[in-house]
Length: 209
Image (cartoon, rainbow, N blue to C red):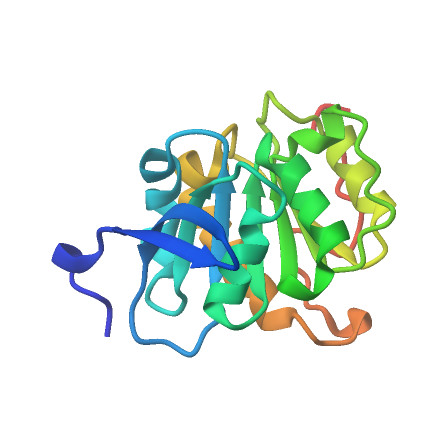
């Protein structure tokens, strides 16, 4: 049963572990699903609420304004389980640092409209499963950059969707939530068994070619 609209709003939480404190918003319902940490560089309530409200029926969702590569690790320790880290835009750089420094804290990394492709970040040493989510109308990341990021990461998949532009957590919340649900269902399967989702197993064609 879906959570009633009146209780879909986030609760402010102060996550503390081993001397570190992370201010966050939490969307949750009784669930056995993994904790999803959505990291943004901006207003958490504004940027995370649209996608979090769609995911909270089956997952605990934590929204954070990522300040340090260790913030997601702190949340993982608090959740007592590896988390799925979704990083949008500029938060992607710190999220990649998290994946390199503490891969055991993450079940998977999702780079949504990932600005790291524009900043010369080396993704080749990431050892966690990675989903690269890209809107074809993005002004922050090109098709070529998204394909390049996927090509640098051994255990990765790419989803590109039409009608999706910048800030997918807010502006493409339904598409991003559905992509995450598909990806989480597929995690752990052998690569050859991954079902097709918007050409995720093959390099998508350049829509502007």
